[in-house]
Amino acid sequence: MNLSSFSGICLEDLERVSLQSRSDSKFLLHRRQLEEILPVLTAHYHILDMEGRRIFDYESIYFDTPDMMLYLQHHNGHRQRYKVRYRRYANSGLCFFEVKLKRSSGKMLKRRIQVAHIGTALEENAAALLSEQAPEWLPRLQPMLQIDYRRLTFTDHQFTERATIDIDLNFRLPQNTAAAVAYPDLVIVELKQEKQARHSFISQALHDLHITESGLSKYCLGICHLYPHIKQNEFKKSFRRLEQVFETSLP
Image: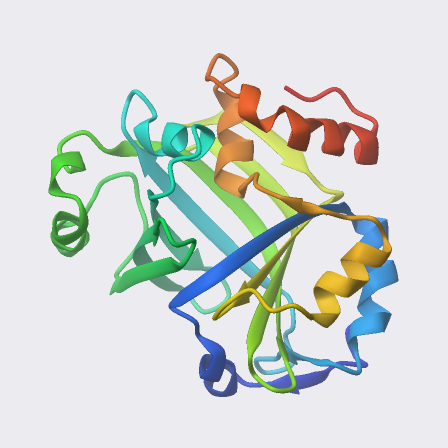
């Protein structure tokens, strides 16, 4: 993957388009399609560069209730829904606890605090943040899924949108490393904007390859694989798309 033709920016510049309140669009594609798209984007986007590194390792542990209330909010199309997770930026060692709320308007609001480490228990300050958002969940939440992947992060030259490209995805149960599934050729593109723009060079490049928006998040994809008896009929369209791209049998 040749990323040298992109102009690099530092983390401080990237924060100009942090978009804590935003609209998100997700796209699923094959790695070879990514190789077709990247050259088209070089004239329009900067890439995050930290001391010469342009691809970064992420680790996330997601929490849910035993009856998968947060997953089912997404599956059942609730207009307001949450994600709760720890995230570790493996290259820097920085760790955060995050609560993401998708509002009925479609805007995404994220609250997060820095923590010493990620784990399978909610430490005191993480529990305090969560209690501000949805205290009725606190006694019921437990770790349900770990996702490890590598990420490229871009912003357009006008600093109006941010795009992340996730590769080398691995899903596993936090307390059972034997229960795992890998997606080495899956690419997930997420476009993050203050509001959905009519024109975006990334969305146009995806459209030209007949790649349409998907409502399937990394969390939901991992849950469907590692908890095969969970309700998942609303994601059948997304799974059919994956079958077409990868020619494999999926849930």
